[in-house]
Length: 470
Ligand code: UD1
Ligand code: CA
Picture 1 (cartoon, helix red, strand yellow):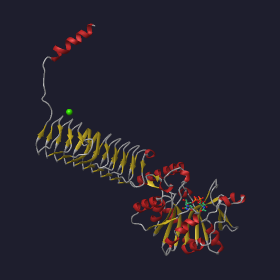
Picture 2 (cartoon, helix red, strand yellow):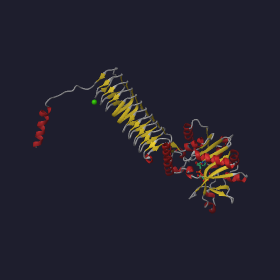
Picture 3 (cartoon, protein in one colour):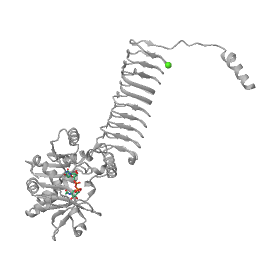
Picture 4 (cartoon, helix red, strand yellow):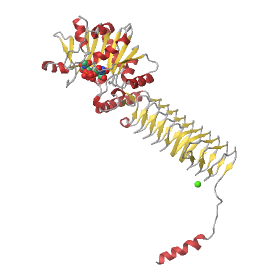
């Protein structure tokens, strides 16, 4: 099909039935705002521009979409008052100038996919129609606009539920709210739609009757799978649809070479990417913009949010990580907590009950047990003994601990920051490091060991015997 196309996405409504202070189209579905889905589908289907009609929290909608699709030709049109769907499209009419065709869709249909839009575009081209509307048979059509066909079966108008006669209400074929229309015909129709109806709204659906009256070809395409246009009105519908999208996403990942154990228990959000031959365990949650390389093993119950994970990384059970970077061949967990600003080098190892925050661990460095590492820069091949704590907070400010390459830290050590420990230095077990340590030195702050011989016989034994006699 020649000529350019533009999509108009209706996203001005508040969505009262969500009972939320957040506009409906901004509610997240599998980790990304609802309105992103139809916009992405339109872009993937090859439309040249997307014009979004905004109203409630319009600035936030604009920010989200511009941030998500920085390369796309996105135009925003404000609708100040909700006067109806035709009025909404009219607000965006200026942005459709110069385009040949207009796809019209709703911002609250996250299941809409590009394949369905391509079928719509194809059907429109084949029938040479001025307008292609989409419909489906609803077991309970209450609330939907009904498709009224003439005796020959040609769609001639849509009647809204509120305006329908009893006879019309028996029609099961309903309007899906997804259209493709020639731009000039749309402009003509919008100029002729009034609001003389039950709801006093400007109905976009009236363009069918208007264009039919002009002798234009109306094509009604029945959707084989109406679930793709299911609009979200309530939180229960959101949750149900999110489940469907989640399952499909897991299936697609498995098709692309990712193993998922018990996919019903696994949540992988829409913006997450995973490389080939990575295995995902039971109950894993991968959220936000997390990116995982190939050949990784992410074991049961791990929750990763906005993390960057290299190749062949082993994330053991019940690791919680956010805004962390994990280098290739590294191992983390079980039960580790990587907080924002954690950067683990290649082959680094972080073991159980280790918490990190704004912490860099160089290549091959290890913190295997029971440790807190905050505000620190740790070089390559550093060994951190069990029970090491960076004392980074003095009650007022945060201070930094720097450990150069090759430092060996014995168990039960505290670094009272700011401190800097030089290359290849050794920190003896039980030491409280309060000042800088030069390269290659040993630092110790423990008290000398004292041994008192015969203590048991002299002190404890007599008391134990006395106790037994009582
Ligand atoms: C609409 C159709 C109906 C169809 C149904 C499918 C009309 C008149 N009716 O009804 O035939 O069966 O969709 O779901 O079009 N919006 C705006 N500005 C407005 C009004 C609406 O942006 O002034 C947005 C809403 O936020 C929503 C979408 O347009 O996302 C649909 O509007 P809504 O009022 O919900 O239409 P329905 O009554 O569902
Ligand atoms: Ca101690």
